[in-house]
Image (cartoon, rainbow, N blue to C red; front, side):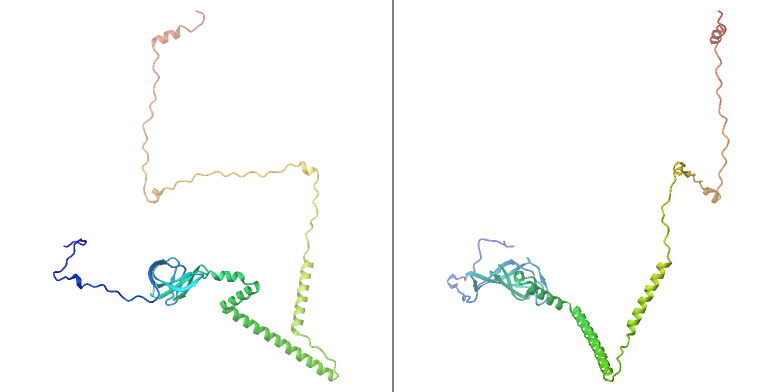
Length: 287
């Protein structure tokens, strides 16, 4: 097996170095491209497949030097590929806002320069913008508002028709020489009658209720000397629980204990002869 790294190389016998000529390729007339390793400067969403690319993900990108400049600051463009669908995403530097600008292939999730624009707007513009966003976001609320407006318009139209009809009736009665009479509203009469019945029921309920007599109790001096009877204290004693004979339930009989031998009583030792003589000599105190 030949070595992988060698200092000498094989030259065939018919090798002629004069036949080797230098060749120069055509110069690249387009923009200068350079392969670099970079991280995504902002979080974005791919417009081709909807993949989210978080900020800081590493890519092998192509760096392009554009002819655009901002106060003599060169603007660079970068080309990357989506990690899911391999769609091309391009973004470039933005020296004006000290950030990056997404051009095509993806949509940026958050653009910080919008915050400065929001800070410059007035309170009225801010309220109008918030109301507009809320109305666009909540379509159901807008539908409910439309239904409520329609109901209000219908109620107003009914009230106007009733007023017009009443005025026409009064005008016709005045032309005929008849005293106009206003017909009572049955709903209003029913409401007044209900209120009167509730008030009468409440008055009767409070009238029949008697308040207790809360007069002060007079305590005499003789009652202060009367001893107070203390009820006897009830004590409880713990009764030992009887043990259940499980052997009797199973039909097992225990043998009666055999009587043991009587305990031996040790007889006193007989007194010696010397002690008997000494005790006999001290029978009286006359000696």
